[in-house]
Length: 298
Image (cartoon, rainbow, N blue to C red; front, side, top):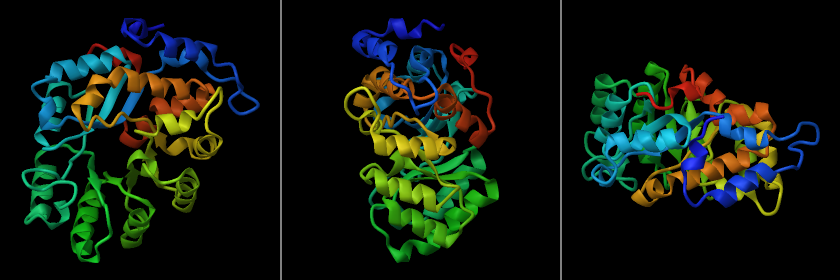
């Protein structure tokens, strides 16, 4: 067993909770329990934004990944240079994706930024991004349709994902523009209630989702996982990935705790399901081999 878990201060209570998890995960298969610590993780929602560059140099980011058994990460940044710095430092550990935000273009106005399509095309031509996003659609604006059709075309040409932070209706709208677009739904909708998450995942059989910022909702209260989330997890186990969402430095400060919380809820699932969400789904989505042997490498 890897010993990285024993190096993290302040997490003893959570480690004990993992070891003591004894409830059956689905009535037939015992949960993976403490063996969850043997699993490599794929962090499907990482940002390496400019405010983190001085406080957390690239080497320290990979060290944090190593410390927490995170073999690989899907990274987008504001600006994109942060992603490229990480990818150049550890190309075998970083799956880069292109976030549109740069200069004055941010989460609330990026679709209105002049030359956005040219910017995205240029970055995609220059670097091996495997997704466009994570980007926000806070409110549908039909005048953005032309830009999104261009973005979908860029993604389809390269067979890469759109990583979308939105509620349910923008996801339906994007599929309406092109039913074959490949989408990762950031935070599984974040504020979207679990029944609506289930309904959207059921409506669109190709929709993927990362569960970043959903850890406490999934864990629920008491010994067992939240029943509504458990239904989502079992029915869509082939389409989910965990994530950290390091959107501010405080998330990097808490990275070990976030990854432990993810292992805590994974520990309550059968091994096969836990492995899929921890890393095997990402292996299929991104054509990688992911293992604990990558820990300590670049």
